Image (cartoon, rainbow, N blue to C red; front, side, top):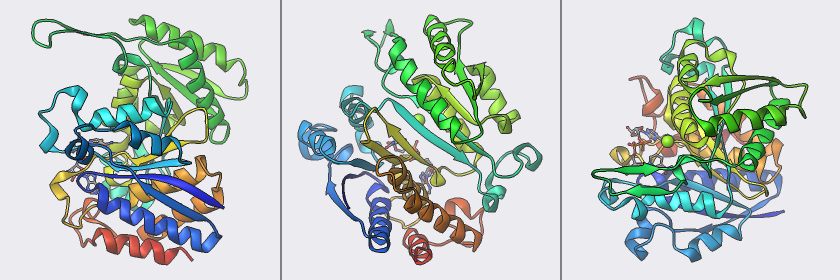
Length: 353
Ligand code: NAI
Ligand code: MG
């Protein structure tokens, strides 16, 4: 079968890791008889330089017409002084909004081979820690009305509709069904009206999932519990702002930002897949970037947009195998011997047979 992918290499290390992702996809295609065709899309800093816009409409249109979007990373110092609405990140917000991607799924997994990179004590982490965080992506304070002059007074309106909460809550319960059957909903219902709506809606949806255990947690407590006792979590579901912060925290307990993929999903099969890290300008062009987060993002794409579960697991198994054999890029080498971006993906390709 043929799958159309809109590929956004972006800025910094983006093009380097994106290239490795394509090699892995081509290998999967050869092995399992699929064709992945990539249309290159300009977004982020490169698009600002070319068109004066971080995501021109015709570039977004290419994404809309694809089966999935594969994004590396955007941004860099060069564009840091632009106003918020003109910056590379605006391109990302427009992609999420324009494609109706309301849920960001971030697995936080600790590979036993990389336990040394985890900043938490062994007895806290235990074996095979595997948390799935779902962050709402198209509502909340990031999309509320803005006001003020940025100098003497400013405001950002936090707002949610029940349907926005309901659809991500359902996704959380459905995901939990395929995992350890537990959902933790995170809010600030002791203070915020939007959080009371959040909690009421999650409780209502929960009635359709009697087989799933649900608990509620305030966001400040959740931030603490993630480092105090991360093993209590299976699926965590939360709003856009809280999710932004908690997902970064959860990724750090796994030890390396270069390892973790993410998926952004909507109500159709068209999803966007990207590593959780940024464009890492400090190591761009040095061959030091870890391609694993990008490669595992491809696995999520195969799983969620293309329903190719076997192929997704083949990629994940290949990554585990090379880690087991001791291959390390600099970010996960803990000061020991490290290999380059290309060498790492060569090893992963060699495991795919
Ligand atoms: P970053 O994630 O790019 O880098 C943080 C640190 O992690 C750096 O030391 C970097 O070298 C390292 N790192 C990141 N990815 C790595 C990889 N694959 N392998 C090895 N080391 C890796 O975050 P930072 O420095 O805050 O942001 C840099 C630029 O990226 C900014 O312009 C920012 O706006 C943008 N950014 C873009 C995102 C996106 O495209 N989704 C997300 C986060 C930041
Ligand atoms: Mg973030």
